[in-house]
Image (cartoon, rainbow, N blue to C red):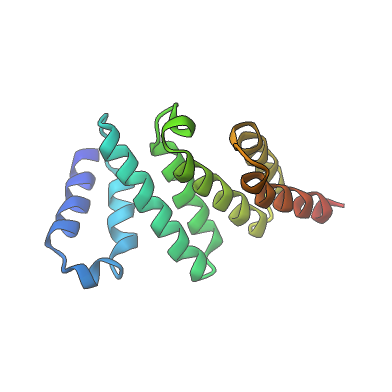
Amino acid sequence: RGRMHKSIGRLIMKHSPEDKIEDLLFLVVDQLNRGEVGKEERETTGLAKLNLKAGKKAMSEATFLRSASYFEAGIGALYDSHWEEYYDLSLELHSLLAETQYCNGCFEIVGKIATIVLNNAKSLEDKLPIYIYLIKSLGAQN
């Protein structure tokens, strides 16, 4: 069943005109997320990037539960060593997940994400957005 979802997602991408891919983004990413994740680094990184794109699109539509699920799927698609190999992608996925979880009122999750980012971020500039959402989350709980 997983292979079928993956095949459907790939076929939609392959046979859709480029100007229509954006309209079909959620459908494609949902199918690929239901599919079996391959072991090839290029494939998993591509899936993470598609989830990032879908999550951003969902955020622009103010569907924060949906966007959080895309960011979580994107993080889940990456390898364990993703912070070293795909720092910018990892940082962006985690930072946007923290933002959407804040919007969803999931403050404990924001704290968990903050811990991950603060342990892996390389600069204060990279940590700053996480500190902001962590402070906002703590303020919202009191």
